[in-house]
Length: 496
Image (tube, rainbow, N blue to C red; front, side, top):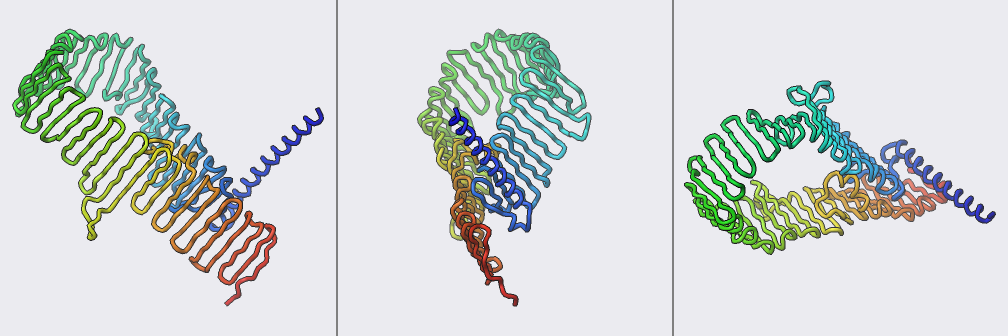
């Protein structure tokens, strides 16, 4: 019993000592961060704590590896992260603030006077926080809806019991009672009434008329564009098109055949939608059968042998696939630039953006490039900025909230550069290397050794073993030796 108590006491002492040591180290680091000039306020305690300027010139402070991070830039932008729980980005110039909480569980954003937040499927959006009667929305999908629209009209609804919802699902207004028993919706001056949706429906307004008793009969008319009907859908459907140059009629007797004859195109269908043959002034296409074999000529050059292989050409656009949905290749002409993407799901992603015009050497300028080999590494370059890191556990291109909250947790090694400035980091700061042009270079393997060279003003050389157990520094003609952390011996620089 005495031995057991002794072991428990020793573990308690060791645990408390560890807490005191870590707390003291963090307090020491915080003290260094707020004392002296900018250069003196930087420190590097490996993955425990560090404060260093990155390649952008932003001051970045980290505690306990990737879990706590604080960054500030000269233009006032700030970043905070308590991973994986919360991150914050603040941009005073754009007056924008973004919070991510265990993304995708919750988020909050503010842009100028506009504010919104989301928790799971509950949303809130205030269009002007300074206006007490501004437009706002509150939704807890799919049950509760409340808000005030742009015309200052209030609304509320409890689904499926009843109520009124404004500016939702592309509709200006939706009213319902014991849905699907009764419902009404409107877009501009077009109004739709439903009884036992989708059985009975009637729409009228602005040259539009639709009537439906599903699946027995329906009729639809849209100004002078078309008229459509069905009887016992999907067995019989009929349409008449009235636009000049495209007028004509068509029908489908499902599942046997269908025929559409327009001024500029004629289509035959057999066992629709499996077999379709269309010939027109601008486009010919065939399905035999759909979706397995698709072929078109004219405005769209297309040949699909799905899911084995396929390609599609149209003005400024090219896309192909193999073993769908595994291999995809896409090229998009954006005027002055050409964007390319190649994807092998989920293992490989490559995208780039290049100038279409060649330079004097006959080369095209690469504006941006991205490569990812999942789950091993990713590489990104935009202009003179580049970033390489490993691991990469998200199979597609990493969205911004994941970059802020989760990606640093699994990044074992990163290399970030802008021009001649380069930063390397291994195991969240166990090893660091910094280069600023040809004038500044430093490297450190915590806690064993660190070395620094700075030739910006006076030639500076500095090295330390075990964070100052033994160290040496030279700045110009001033030299100093450090022993046992506190003992310093040296020669001061002579006055001119």
